[in-house]
Image (cartoon, rainbow, N blue to C red; front, side, top):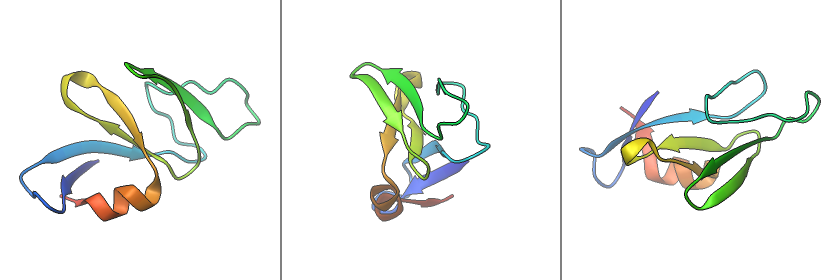
Amino acid sequence: MRYRSIQNPTYQIEATQWGEGVDHPVVVNLKQDDPRGWFENSSGWHTVQVGDWIVEGGKNEYYLLKPDTFSRTYEPS
């Protein structure tokens, strides 16, 4: 889904909130009974918890934001 920056509405991103039953092409889920997932970007491996946001930045780079940070920074476009 597309979101825009609260401080700069012309800046838009694509983001997905991780949760049960949510798949994302960059996230690997190693254990079926574990709600966490993992993904790798240029700064290493990251653990994705239920409620975390996976944000697609420039050049197909993905990064992780915690729910409180995401809600203070972005809103639906």
